[in-house]
Figure 1 (cartoon, rainbow, N blue to C red):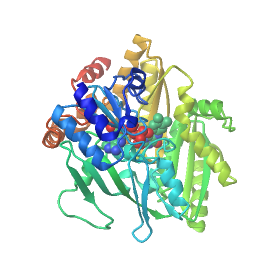
Figure 2 (tube, rainbow, N blue to C red):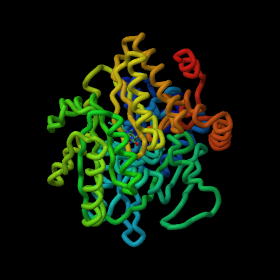
Figure 3 (spheres, protein in one colour):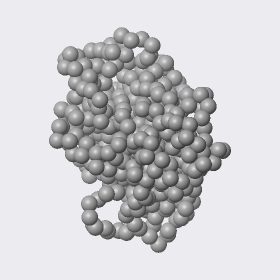
Length: 471
Ligand SMILES: Cc1cc2nc3c(=O)[nH]c(=O)nc-3n(C[C@H](O)[C@H](O)[C@H](O)COP(=O)(O)OP(=O)(O)OC[C@H]3O[C@@H](n4cnc5c(N)ncnc54)[C@H](O)[C@@H]3O)c2cc1C
């Protein structure tokens, strides 16, 4: 980046909204993903869509890579500026702009923290369901760009199900407004969906309107422990087969239970092989009926003990325990690699078994937790990036996990996105024609490849060789 371009960015956003020291570049050289790092040339915090449009026009003219960065909590190296260039932050664009109670929508800037949206609408008797475990720090712009899911995804869906409208600055600096506060709109291609989950590779989202729903009147939380992973997985399938769609059906294996208990001291039993956290919400009668039935199904499928949370506080502690699973595991070894292979619900038992076998085969420590009701598992590898031999085995183990997930009818990522980390595997899921269509879209919208370059599209197919050798 030339001194002249830096001066132009300073003139657009003001000196106080530019970071350029080496220490600052180091701070923005990585995100929540282990083992990926690259320094940007400059970091800017624009204050409006107009400033972002000006910034992008300079980048387009000077061919400067742009990486949009919310809170940097993504787990696929999606905000690592692997080609250098400019990082755009949204800390100056963190306002809730409007709540529309007639159309049941909220309009926000991209830098608003997810939890703040939830708290704000709930204080108005409304509900924004998508609740990634990182919601206390993640931004809504990041959630939309990753199409994030959460503990409530089984019943309420994921972020894409709530995006009604957005403003995007395109790679040439033009501003595009999409969608509206409409229940129905089929005018043209569904362009808005293209930007949901695009990981900042097609444009910068500068304003978002989200759908809200009424806040459920009541909820109840139950818990079941099992002495086998299969019994827990079979309980998940049995609950859904009984035509109950719980708001939450979360799974933790023995390693995760131990790590969470060690971290939080909330009384989880250390001898259990698996735990299911179950929650239902809705009207009181249905909630009571469903939660009792889920407990019964767990017992019929071999739960060694079950319990109902006696208060909202107790339920919150259990859910916080589940949300803290990654942080708890991360304390165990120097490096944590969290994956999110996802399979059809009916294949959970097979996937969990396969993960265990792979862990033994490659002699790597893998604990698993996740959104069992969604088939979205988080095999979490506890390792040490300094140990080259172990890292090679980790890479082989993860490649094999993705491979098996796809064989079982699943995918390489259910919610964390592709970023740089999973780019080499994307073709396994989409096939050559899927990649060709994606490349055609990217090429037509961003011909200079300035929007988050190095993400989604693999440079090489190294991982394919790893899996072939590993089998
Ligand atoms: C402890 C922990 C728990 C997690 N739990 C979950 C979970 O339960 N479910 C889940 O889905 N994910 C989870 N994640 C992953 C992560 O938190 C989510 O992907 C989240 O949506 C990222 O938000 P962010 O603000 O940190 O975005 P970032 O990490 O900063 O960015 C994510 C991607 O979005 C792009 N981007 C950001 N803002 C914009 C914008 N305004 N316009 C265009 N592109 C943009 C970035 O370029 C990047 O590609 C977890 C992560 C951690 C560390």
